[in-house]
Image 1 (cartoon, one colour):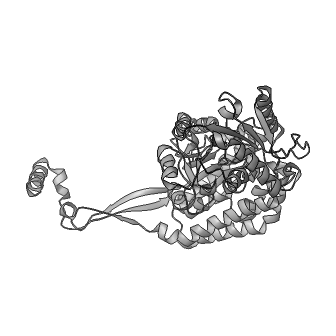
Image 2 (cartoon, one colour):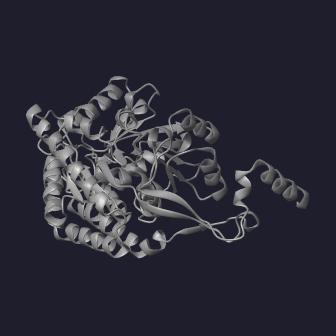
Image 3 (tube, one colour):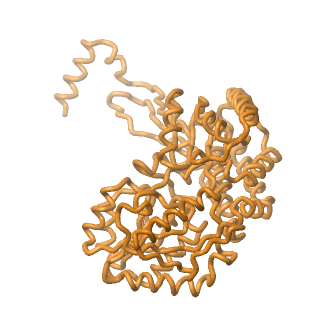
Amino acid sequence: MSILDNAPVTPANEDDAAIEALHAAFAVQKAAFDVDRSPPIEVRRERLQILMGMMTSNRERIARAVADDFGAHPAGQSDLIEVLGVIGRAAHVLENLEAWMRPDPRHIDSAVFGSARAEMRLQPKGVIGNMVPWNFPFDLSVGPMVEMLAAGNRVIVKPSEYTPACADLLAEMVAATFDPDLVTVAVGGLELARAFSSVAWDHLLYTGSPGVGRQVMAAAAANLTPVTLELGGKCPAILTPGSVTARNIESVIGTKIIKNGQMCVSVDYALVPRAEMEAFVDGARAFMAGASPDYSRSDDCTGVVSERHLARLSDMLGEARGRQVRVVSLDGRDDVDPETRRMPISLVVDPPADLRVMREEIFGPILPVVPYDDLEAAVAGINAGDRPLGLYVFGDDEAVTDRVLDATHSGGAAVNTCAVQSSLPSMGFGGSGMSGMGRHHGMEGFREFSNQRGLVVRGQGDMIDAFYSSAKGSAVADAALAHG
């Protein structure tokens, strides 16, 4: 899902004003960058420390805003992901920034270029736009800002209109913390989102659906704006024979609890050996009974973000039941709390391939459990679809899990766990194919938001002038070939 998919309608005059303000903010930041194109490391560190302070001091307000927008949201998840995740990301960058900023020497042939030196230098790109989805409104807005600021850039963020309380709070936090010529927030609706991707950014990050990603990339292409696309996909969990254990079931279902499945790297479907299907279903029930009894009425459950998204998920389950497919509610109840939109986690057992739950990214508390008889055939089925953002393999035989990893392609992967690859500050995060392009987080993010500039400094004793004269060049080439 994305910030443009079935977006709430904003009055045209409000978006017109927001678009005008966006262009004005962009002009201010471009002018500021022209004056200060390469801030020193001390300035970059100070900006990151200020950012960390902003997140710490607004911790409780962030939790309230997220709960307001989702109807219900565990405060612990807000702390761990939206606040501490961002702070940990900044701490990692601060620890490594000096090393990342150093020029990277490259080999140069002294026989031809004498005492010249060659190196790669990273320089700020300029003004970067960040189009943020609704599911992690602070982690995916302030998180990438860490590497953007570390790389010396200026940033404008467009939050999702699905999370208005978070958008307004983010705008207030940023305005109270940073000068608008460094960081600012553009709040508005669908027309602002469309206008945002058409700005001549020096780089644009979009997180959302592949369908809207195409639109964003097409708009960016008019300005030849480089893009990082963090998209979704149907992320599978493959349980190899013998791996249906309580620990592994806990990983799969526990990951589904995070944001109640509204996470781009959540498990979208589980591939389970046919002989172990009932063990998986029984294990999932047992895990939920112990971990979170009456889950959908508890503080562990995040509400579905909107009535429209809730209706979509309900229609998916309705289609499965209408086709006489077995649906197992891990709550033991099927009803949804209408006030908070809290929905139980349901297993859809052995669904036919043409059901919506098997054709679309689910992005909610529904988990198809798909049996297989042959592991290689299961892997071939994964490869027949689009490349997922995450892929998870379970099993104690390293040769088997490695074989699955080698035979598949995904943005990220994990063995005997799920989604952890997306949370490490040190590990580049991104997709492949329909699940996206480019990386943020860690060193990869720092480089993504930097211009990687190749530099040669001429020295003494070279033969560069041989390139200017065909006769001299041929003589040098003849001598080199004769020598070696």
